[in-house]
Structure formats: structure tokens, C-alpha cells
Length: 207
Image (tube, rainbow, N blue to C red; front, top):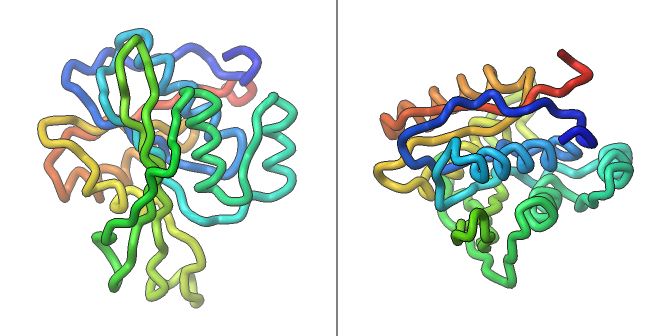
């Protein structure tokens, strides 16, 4: 945690079991957020049997990969590939070739691509899913069609994977937590009536 520059978790214990959604990014943020999930499970603050890392095919820049390498990690060519590597490197997840596609609940005939694996945390098996959300080409960004999935689309892509009777815990970090919590409420919360929690570590250099 000190090497990553993040402070101790401030998450209070969540009594209900949760599906965990890690909001994906391109660089070191994936490692930071995944590390926060691991320590909250290990501490007993949350109980889960499913971690979902939500991303898309956004390319990862050289600078973002360099930030990862300076901390001893590696990233992929895309946000989706980098999330896979974060799950492997931080959670110890094993994926094999368990890949499939499911229909997206937005847009016109779009699909969400999934890699499904398993990690052992606190001596228990936890399912780990990394998804690549399609973007809706009819969605406009300013005066131009979208070119990548946004937070709303990545959360909606995770909706079919949520388990009945579970709350949802969205994991981001510091300045993004309130924003992504709001998007989670507007998408997952309104669609399912589930309780939406959101957390993430504070970065020491921004406090």
C-alpha cells in the first residue's frame, strides 16, 4: 500500500454480501483499485463470491504502461487486457480460456465480451470476471459519435452478472468515488433496486 501511495481503507463493514465491481482504467489505477478490493475482503469488511472488473477496448498509452512498470507491474494493449493482468497480478486469478460473449442491455445488438476465472482469497474461491463493454455508436459525445464505452455502459454491461440478494460495491479511488457512485445509482440502482455502495483508497499525494 505504501509503495502504491494509498492510505488505509476507510470502508465500514457492509453486512450484506456484495458483488464487487472494479471500475476499470488504463494504467496504475487498475492495480490500486484491485489492491483495495483484496484488502477489504481479507479484512472481513466485505463478503463476496464475485469480483467484476469492467472495462473496454480503449488503447493504453506508453506513459500509462511505463507507470505500471515502474511499480513492478505490467499492462496490456487495451484497458480490458490491463484489467486481466491486474486480476492476475494482484488477486492471483487464473483465467485459462474461459471466454464468452453475452448480449448488452443497451444499444442495438451489442455484445459484452467476458473472461471468467477464479481466485483464492481468505482460503475461499471467488469468481473473477473481466468484461469488455461495447460502446453504443449512436451515443453522441459533443457533436461526434462515441468512440469508446463510458462508465454508464460498462456498469450496464455488468448488470446481467449480478446475483440476486447481493448489494453492489463499486470500487474506484479518491476523486472518482462520488462520480462513479452516482453513475452506479443511476444505472444499476434504478434497474435493480439494489443497495449501491462505493469506496476506494485515498492517494497520499492528493490528500
